[in-house]
Length: 430
Ligand code: ADP
Image (cartoon, rainbow, N blue to C red; front, side, top):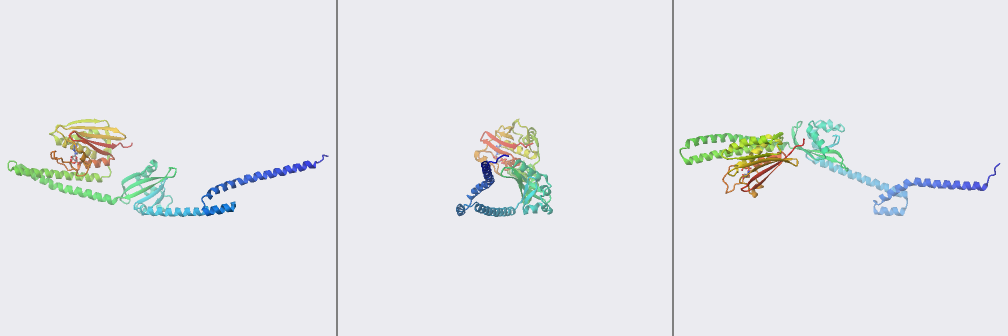
């Protein structure tokens, strides 16, 4: 039978106990580690505490006390934040409600997230829509152009506008602006639409156009009759009184002027209020040929030379309106021409625009007048020049039309050498 060595047993027991202690130590360190991490984080938060609280904690040297203090601090600041958010929410609600235009916020799936009273009043006739959770924008608007506008704003991350939108259900007109909403990472989360009711302005505008149209129509009839009778008078007095002849001729020219003035006023009024242009592709060769044929008819006594260089032959625009632009400009070139008028017509494509230039070798315009010639009724009448009849409305009509095409027009001129009108029309995206 083996003999038990008492010294060996004692040694083994000591090793076992030491091993157990070491294991317990390692385990306790391992278990305390997360606690230490939390304490470390609390230390950081501690710096946010008010000064007296910080001092208090330093003397306490009690971790549980520290945790308790910091938790109640966190609780208080959470309450404060919540209160702040509530106030901000109330402020933004008041702001949204006080906007006199309709306002809607949608998420990226076109669900309505917020609408103001004005929007509900104008567009949400079906009260049930508001009760349905996540009502969609397409339930409010049947008109695809509105839905398309919101989509484009979110897709292009750009403010998109639509002016003069006619809402069939309310029979009102609106100018709409849609702004995309992005989060802190720049990702689109929805969009905000503002609907500004412009019905009154539209109606007033329509009344103005109707008024001017009526006035010019009513004026034309007596004017034509005055002119007719004056011509009759002129034919009868031709061999008689010279003074009477002059007077009658004056009556005729003045009635012509009045007629032209009313015609131009009518044109300007219509162009200003005409919202929708009829965009088509226009061949510059063809349109200028037509315009030249008509305008040249007025200046048969003049020997006119025309050069054409259309490197960009096609533009997109409203044919009727652009015909008016080109006839006004060419008419001016021939009206304010030199003895032997030369007209240079050209076009080219540059930076997404078609540039059209109408150049003449006429009398030219002094620098001081260049800034103002596009104003209504502005006319240049130099003492040195012969008196040329006009209304001063031609160039303002031209500018309005070009602006309606989202283009620009500018003028360059030199006295005695000639004038250039340079138009830039954007090329529409395919
Ligand atoms: P209107 O010709 O009826 O006076 P417009 O608005 O067409 O009115 O032109 C404004 C003024 O600009 C004219 O009175 C004229 O003095 C000047 N103007 C316009 N085009 C030309 C041109 N091609 N050459 C010289 N002067 C011009």
